[in-house]
Image 1 (cartoon, rainbow, N blue to C red):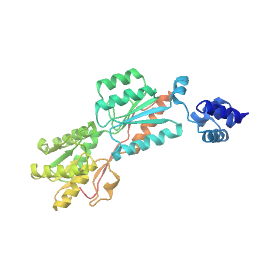
Image 2: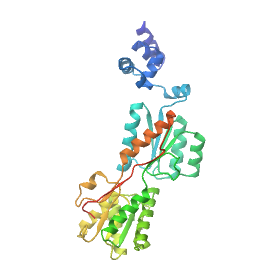
Image 3: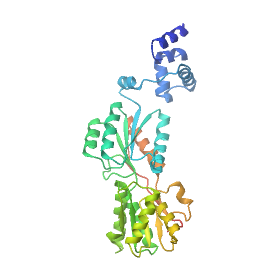
Image 4: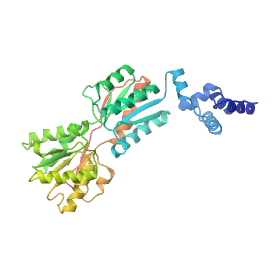
Amino acid sequence: MNKRHHTKSRALGKVTLSDVAARAGVAPMTASRAINQPELVSAVLRARVEQAVQELGYVPNRAARALASACSRVIVVLVPSLSNAVFTAVLAGVQDALDPCNYQILIGNTRYCDAQEEKLLLAYLQSNPDGILLSGLTHSARVKQVLAASRVPVVSMMDLAPEPDVMSVGFSQVDAGYAMTRYLIDKGRKRIGYMAAQLDERTLRRAQGYRKAMQEAGLADPALEMMSPEPSTIALGAQLLERMLAGMPGLDAIFCCNDDLAHGAIFQCQRRGISVPGQLAVCGFNDLPASAWMTPSLTTVGTPLYRTGFDAASLLLDAIRGNAVPAPRIDLGFTVLARESA
């Protein structure tokens, strides 16, 4: 009888949840829980349902479930790059936090573009997501309007919102930029340049911290800043170093807004026979995996990338479940990692 039932279902169309329940020998509600809320079902029943799903090739209809329960079990995550190791580390944390709860992740690459962020958000909101994770705090008026109208819980990653009741997870980009510059000043460096690319909101906030430290030390000079809107790459770091050396006489240190640029600057110094850190100290930001192993090893700012993603996703889950959120604004801090390059 069961065999005829499954054959008929397949002949007429897609395998249904009822087919899975019948194959597993459980009620449809139990099969649904085993698939959508596995933590509520015993290991034995869960295994039977999982086996039935595999045998029948069942694919859950998330749209139908969302209409029935007002819960899509979908989380939208928007990041500005999918090739930058910074954001792949953040995404790894997000996935590890959400996977045990059986959430699906819709990842969007905004490419550092407001229009692209608007486009992705409008498209993904059609999936009725349970929550949204955004990178940074700066968004267009249209994005803010859409988010407010959606009433979907939102957590910002990578920076801290000035408002204590706005959910955000990260660290102060301004304080980190200040701390790195202060480190160089304390090392006796006086002509400290700031090398920046892409000029996204985080890069500009690090520049604020750099300027604050330089002003306090009486070393501020706008001519020491090299700000390029080009996408950040190792090659660009080498090119910007050449421009800085040509236009900034007496330069004795460079604070790069990220490790990519710092790698390029060090490689170019080696090509030109410039001693690092003897003649020129070089620092980066974000502590990419190669930074500790290059020669000289790179002095940089260590940032909690994986934990940012994990904690932001965990905070979002609490908001979705209606749990009390005692600390909407989570400061994970940063570390100045003193190595050989400065």
